[in-house]
Amino acid sequence: QVQLVESGGGVVQPGRSLGLSCAASGFTFSSYGMHWVRQAPGKGLEWVATIRNDGSHKYHGDSVKDRFTISRDNSKNTLYLQMNSLRVEDTAIYYCTRGLPMAGDHWGQGTLVTVSS
Amino acid sequence: QSVLTQPPSASGTPGQRVTISCSGSSSNIGSNAVNWFQQLPGTAPKLLIYTNNQRPSGVPDRFSGSKSGTAASLAISGLQSDDEADYYCAAWDNGLNGWVFGGGTKLTVL
Image (tube, rainbow over all chains, first blue to last red):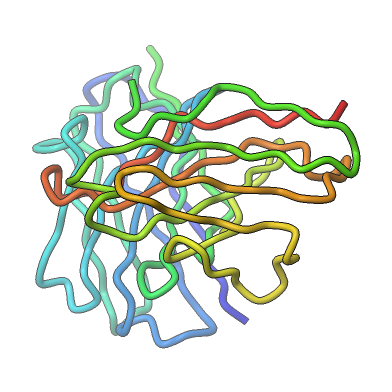
């Protein structure tokens, strides 16, 4: 069965960096684009970044552009999100989710990132 | 402020039919497929509807989606108490080159 497992969350000070991972299993990872979506406490869903199946194209939301970078290693079936220059407003649960043809058909359990001094 | 506009709340009694609207623009809903997600408290979102009106396997046919122009809607018939959740619409936006979500609608079953 399809599984997505995020890891790497934690408490970090403003301005510091953190890297998230999403380990995928149960499907041909290299055939799917992948997304990161976050949810701040008590708020709605916010798209963070998308990467195509072969890593050739990457897209980042305006609120994280130039600070966050999405990447993947298809040999390890793993999706990554490198987060630099973290801000208090980046505090959220970060989910990875599968792309087309049924975008969002599987989600991880999420990993909590708390940015606080 | 979300790119897609949803009502913040909706409600109904058991057995009723409720609809949740989602309004966008030509660069998102008007050009691309709409997906709907259900999120129960403390859990990850779950895909309810994809490509405007398709249900993944396992989603009851009480849930249906439709799209017309730059607007979409989710209908839930035969409302049940465990339908109480937050519902989000989403679509790719060609201008932003990203996935845009509605602000979410909190459904209460009275």
